[in-house]
Image 1: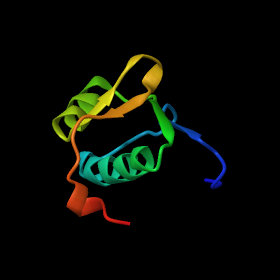
Image 2 (image 1 turned 90 degrees about the horizontal axis):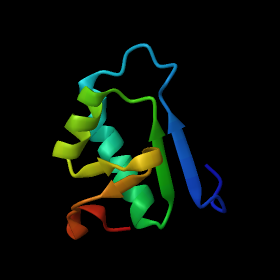
Image 3 (image 1 turned 135 degrees about the vertical axis):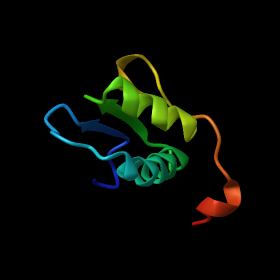
Image 4 (image 1 turned 180 degrees about the vertical axis):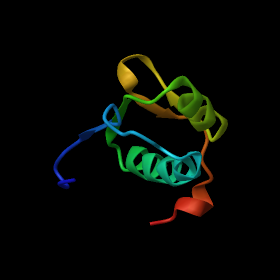
Length: 78
């Protein structure tokens, strides 16, 4: 992703299998991108995956736009 790009759309609609074990990693990446001021949208995730992300503090609003509900400042020092 280019440094100048303020937005990212991650489209999972053609992914055949997204293992639940990948979702904590996705949570960290989404949190870091949001902390850097990037707008991020997730497309193509299923309800189960969205519920798991919500347990990790990631809310996916209308249009797929990501909102980070909580993050630990010390865990994400630059």
